[in-house]
Image (cartoon, rainbow, N blue to C red):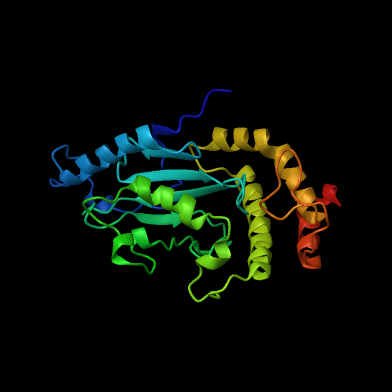
Length: 266
Protein backbone atom coordinates (compact mmCIF):
# COMPACT_ATOMS: atom_id res chain seq x y z
CA UNK A 1 0.00 0.00 0.00
CA UNK A 2 1.18 3.53 -0.80
CA UNK A 3 2.82 5.21 2.19
CA UNK A 4 0.58 7.71 3.94
CA UNK A 5 2.48 10.96 4.36
CA UNK A 6 2.51 12.54 7.79
CA UNK A 7 1.91 15.97 6.27
CA UNK A 8 0.26 16.69 2.96
CA UNK A 9 -1.77 19.29 1.08
CA UNK A 10 -5.15 18.12 -0.25
CA UNK A 11 -8.20 19.67 -1.91
CA UNK A 12 -11.42 18.19 -0.51
CA UNK A 13 -12.50 19.96 2.68
CA UNK A 14 -16.22 19.28 2.24
CA UNK A 15 -16.65 17.33 5.50
CA UNK A 16 -14.45 19.65 7.58
CA UNK A 17 -16.27 20.95 10.66
CA UNK A 18 -15.23 24.55 9.92
CA UNK A 19 -15.84 24.39 6.14
CA UNK A 20 -18.36 27.23 6.34
CA UNK A 21 -16.30 29.43 8.67
CA UNK A 22 -14.47 32.53 7.40
CA UNK A 23 -16.28 32.26 4.03
CA UNK A 24 -17.38 35.89 4.16
CA UNK A 25 -13.71 36.92 4.14
CA UNK A 26 -12.75 35.16 0.91
CA UNK A 27 -12.57 37.22 -2.28
CA UNK A 28 -12.36 40.56 -0.49
CA UNK A 29 -9.57 43.00 -1.22
CA UNK A 30 -7.96 42.42 2.16
CA UNK A 31 -8.56 38.68 2.20
CA UNK A 32 -6.12 37.46 4.85
CA UNK A 33 -6.16 33.83 3.67
CA UNK A 34 -5.26 34.26 -0.04
CA UNK A 35 -3.31 37.52 -0.14
CA UNK A 36 0.38 36.55 -0.22
CA UNK A 37 1.32 39.82 1.47
CA UNK A 38 -0.95 39.22 4.45
CA UNK A 39 0.83 38.45 7.72
CA UNK A 40 -1.82 35.86 8.63
CA UNK A 41 -1.16 33.83 5.48
CA UNK A 42 2.60 34.12 5.94
CA UNK A 43 2.32 32.81 9.49
CA UNK A 44 0.13 29.89 8.42
CA UNK A 45 2.63 28.91 5.73
CA UNK A 46 5.44 29.08 8.28
CA UNK A 47 3.48 26.70 10.48
CA UNK A 48 2.94 24.35 7.56
CA UNK A 49 6.70 24.08 7.22
CA UNK A 50 7.07 23.47 10.97
CA UNK A 51 4.51 20.68 10.80
CA UNK A 52 6.07 19.13 7.71
CA UNK A 53 9.46 18.87 9.41
CA UNK A 54 8.62 18.24 13.07
CA UNK A 55 5.51 16.09 13.51
CA UNK A 56 5.83 13.22 16.02
CA UNK A 57 5.46 9.87 14.28
CA UNK A 58 1.95 9.26 15.64
CA UNK A 59 0.41 12.54 14.44
CA UNK A 60 -0.76 13.05 10.83
CA UNK A 61 -1.92 16.34 9.31
CA UNK A 62 -3.76 17.46 6.19
CA UNK A 63 -4.08 21.07 5.05
CA UNK A 64 -6.03 22.42 2.08
CA UNK A 65 -4.82 24.22 -1.03
CA UNK A 66 -8.09 26.13 -1.49
CA UNK A 67 -8.72 26.78 2.20
CA UNK A 68 -5.49 27.63 3.94
CA UNK A 69 -7.44 28.59 7.05
CA UNK A 70 -8.37 24.92 7.66
CA UNK A 71 -6.41 21.97 9.02
CA UNK A 72 -7.25 18.39 10.03
CA UNK A 73 -5.13 16.14 12.25
CA UNK A 74 -5.32 12.63 13.63
CA UNK A 75 -3.51 11.45 16.74
CA UNK A 76 -2.84 7.74 17.23
CA UNK A 77 -3.51 6.73 20.84
CA UNK A 78 -0.29 5.87 22.66
CA UNK A 79 0.64 2.53 24.20
CA UNK A 80 0.24 2.49 27.98
CA UNK A 81 -2.94 4.58 27.86
CA UNK A 82 -6.63 3.64 27.59
CA UNK A 83 -6.48 5.32 24.17
CA UNK A 84 -3.96 2.88 22.70
CA UNK A 85 -4.45 2.13 19.01
CA UNK A 86 -7.42 4.49 18.74
CA UNK A 87 -7.57 7.27 16.16
CA UNK A 88 -8.57 10.72 17.38
CA UNK A 89 -9.45 13.33 14.76
CA UNK A 90 -9.40 17.08 15.22
CA UNK A 91 -10.47 19.89 12.86
CA UNK A 92 -8.97 23.36 13.21
CA UNK A 93 -9.62 26.76 11.68
CA UNK A 94 -7.29 29.72 11.87
CA UNK A 95 -9.08 32.98 12.78
CA UNK A 96 -8.60 36.07 10.58
CA UNK A 97 -6.43 37.71 13.26
CA UNK A 98 -4.17 34.66 13.70
CA UNK A 99 -1.87 34.35 15.64
CA UNK A 100 -3.28 37.06 17.91
CA UNK A 101 -6.08 34.59 18.64
CA UNK A 102 -5.54 30.82 18.92
CA UNK A 103 -6.95 28.36 16.37
CA UNK A 104 -10.52 27.16 16.77
CA UNK A 105 -10.68 23.42 17.44
CA UNK A 106 -13.26 20.66 17.10
CA UNK A 107 -12.85 17.03 18.14
CA UNK A 108 -14.65 14.31 16.16
CA UNK A 109 -16.48 13.03 19.24
CA UNK A 110 -19.36 11.15 17.58
CA UNK A 111 -21.43 12.00 20.66
CA UNK A 112 -19.00 10.35 23.08
CA UNK A 113 -16.92 11.96 25.83
CA UNK A 114 -13.59 10.17 26.03
CA UNK A 115 -11.83 12.70 28.22
CA UNK A 116 -12.62 15.55 30.64
CA UNK A 117 -11.04 17.89 28.06
CA UNK A 118 -12.92 16.53 25.02
CA UNK A 119 -16.65 17.10 25.28
CA UNK A 120 -19.28 14.98 23.54
CA UNK A 121 -20.25 17.97 21.36
CA UNK A 122 -16.67 18.22 20.04
CA UNK A 123 -15.51 21.14 22.16
CA UNK A 124 -11.80 20.95 22.99
CA UNK A 125 -10.88 22.29 26.43
CA UNK A 126 -7.18 23.16 26.46
CA UNK A 127 -5.27 25.95 28.17
CA UNK A 128 -3.19 26.55 25.05
CA UNK A 129 -6.40 27.27 23.11
CA UNK A 130 -7.68 29.57 25.88
CA UNK A 131 -10.63 27.21 26.39
CA UNK A 132 -9.50 25.69 29.71
CA UNK A 133 -8.31 27.04 33.03
CA UNK A 134 -4.56 27.38 33.33
CA UNK A 135 -1.65 29.58 34.32
CA UNK A 136 -0.69 32.46 32.03
CA UNK A 137 2.37 30.55 30.85
CA UNK A 138 0.16 27.69 29.63
CA UNK A 139 -2.15 29.90 27.57
CA UNK A 140 -1.83 30.95 23.94
CA UNK A 141 1.08 33.29 23.23
CA UNK A 142 0.86 34.98 19.78
CA UNK A 143 4.63 35.32 19.61
CA UNK A 144 5.62 31.75 20.40
CA UNK A 145 2.64 29.35 20.33
CA UNK A 146 2.04 27.13 17.29
CA UNK A 147 -0.46 24.57 16.05
CA UNK A 148 2.25 21.93 16.50
CA UNK A 149 2.34 22.75 20.22
CA UNK A 150 -1.44 22.33 20.33
CA UNK A 151 -1.22 18.87 18.75
CA UNK A 152 1.60 17.75 21.03
CA UNK A 153 -0.35 19.01 24.06
CA UNK A 154 -3.43 17.06 23.01
CA UNK A 155 -1.30 13.96 22.61
CA UNK A 156 0.68 14.24 25.84
CA UNK A 157 -1.52 16.18 28.26
CA UNK A 158 -5.02 15.12 27.21
CA UNK A 159 -4.77 11.58 25.77
CA UNK A 160 -2.65 10.40 28.69
CA UNK A 161 -2.33 7.36 30.98
CA UNK A 162 -4.70 8.60 33.68
CA UNK A 163 -7.22 11.05 32.18
CA UNK A 164 -9.41 10.76 35.29
CA UNK A 165 -7.17 13.35 36.94
CA UNK A 166 -7.58 15.87 34.10
CA UNK A 167 -10.87 17.02 35.63
CA UNK A 168 -10.53 19.95 38.06
CA UNK A 169 -11.77 19.04 41.52
CA UNK A 170 -10.69 15.43 41.37
CA UNK A 171 -9.26 14.06 44.65
CA UNK A 172 -5.89 15.57 45.57
CA UNK A 173 -4.69 12.17 46.68
CA UNK A 174 -4.60 9.47 43.99
CA UNK A 175 -7.58 7.16 43.85
CA UNK A 176 -6.41 4.34 41.64
CA UNK A 177 -9.68 2.42 41.83
CA UNK A 178 -11.67 5.33 40.42
CA UNK A 179 -8.95 6.07 37.87
CA UNK A 180 -8.93 2.46 36.65
CA UNK A 181 -12.71 2.40 36.43
CA UNK A 182 -12.59 5.58 34.36
CA UNK A 183 -9.96 4.04 32.06
CA UNK A 184 -12.21 1.04 31.50
CA UNK A 185 -15.01 3.36 30.41
CA UNK A 186 -12.66 5.30 28.15
CA UNK A 187 -11.39 2.16 26.45
CA UNK A 188 -14.95 1.07 25.69
CA UNK A 189 -15.71 4.46 24.15
CA UNK A 190 -12.46 4.35 22.20
CA UNK A 191 -13.47 0.97 20.75
CA UNK A 192 -16.88 2.35 19.79
CA UNK A 193 -15.13 5.28 18.10
CA UNK A 194 -13.01 2.82 16.11
CA UNK A 195 -16.17 1.18 14.77
CA UNK A 196 -17.61 4.55 13.73
CA UNK A 197 -14.39 5.49 11.92
CA UNK A 198 -14.26 2.18 10.09
CA UNK A 199 -17.77 2.79 8.74
CA UNK A 200 -17.16 6.42 7.77
CA UNK A 201 -13.55 7.63 7.89
CA UNK A 202 -12.92 11.38 7.55
CA UNK A 203 -12.09 12.56 4.04
CA UNK A 204 -8.41 12.46 3.02
CA UNK A 205 -7.78 9.85 5.75
CA UNK A 206 -9.72 6.90 4.30
CA UNK A 207 -6.58 4.97 3.35
CA UNK A 208 -4.90 5.72 6.65
CA UNK A 209 -7.85 4.48 8.72
CA UNK A 210 -8.08 1.28 6.68
CA UNK A 211 -4.35 0.59 6.86
CA UNK A 212 -4.12 1.36 10.57
CA UNK A 213 -6.87 -1.02 11.60
CA UNK A 214 -5.73 -3.75 9.20
CA UNK A 215 -2.32 -3.58 10.85
CA UNK A 216 -3.52 -3.31 14.46
CA UNK A 217 -6.73 -5.36 14.40
CA UNK A 218 -5.32 -8.55 15.93
CA UNK A 219 -3.60 -6.64 18.73
CA UNK A 220 -6.73 -4.63 19.54
CA UNK A 221 -8.93 -7.73 19.64
CA UNK A 222 -6.45 -9.63 21.79
CA UNK A 223 -6.23 -6.66 24.17
CA UNK A 224 -10.05 -6.66 24.45
CA UNK A 225 -9.95 -10.34 25.38
CA UNK A 226 -7.20 -9.86 27.98
CA UNK A 227 -8.99 -6.92 29.59
CA UNK A 228 -12.33 -8.71 29.66
CA UNK A 229 -10.82 -11.81 31.25
CA UNK A 230 -8.93 -9.78 33.86
CA UNK A 231 -5.45 -10.74 32.69
CA UNK A 232 -4.32 -7.18 32.02
CA UNK A 233 -5.15 -3.69 33.24
CA UNK A 234 -6.62 -1.49 30.51
CA UNK A 235 -3.77 0.21 28.68
CA UNK A 236 -1.12 -2.25 29.79
CA UNK A 237 -1.54 -5.15 27.39
CA UNK A 238 1.50 -5.76 25.20
CA UNK A 239 2.18 -7.98 22.18
CA UNK A 240 4.17 -10.33 24.38
CA UNK A 241 1.35 -10.77 26.93
CA UNK A 242 -0.15 -9.24 30.05
CA UNK A 243 1.52 -7.75 33.09
CA UNK A 244 -0.46 -9.62 35.71
CA UNK A 245 -0.12 -13.18 36.96
CA UNK A 246 -3.34 -12.93 38.98
CA UNK A 247 -6.87 -12.02 37.90
CA UNK A 248 -7.74 -8.32 37.90
CA UNK A 249 -11.06 -7.32 39.44
CA UNK A 250 -13.19 -5.36 36.98
CA UNK A 251 -16.89 -4.54 37.13
CA UNK A 252 -19.46 -6.90 35.67
CA UNK A 253 -20.77 -3.96 33.63
CA UNK A 254 -17.36 -3.46 31.99
CA UNK A 255 -17.15 -7.13 31.05
CA UNK A 256 -20.72 -7.13 29.74
CA UNK A 257 -20.01 -4.09 27.57
CA UNK A 258 -16.84 -5.71 26.25
CA UNK A 259 -18.81 -8.81 25.26
CA UNK A 260 -21.28 -6.62 23.34
CA UNK A 261 -18.41 -5.02 21.44
CA UNK A 262 -16.49 -8.23 20.87
CA UNK A 263 -18.72 -11.31 21.29
CA UNK A 264 -15.88 -13.55 20.11
CA UNK A 265 -13.91 -12.79 23.28
CA UNK A 266 -16.52 -14.40 25.54
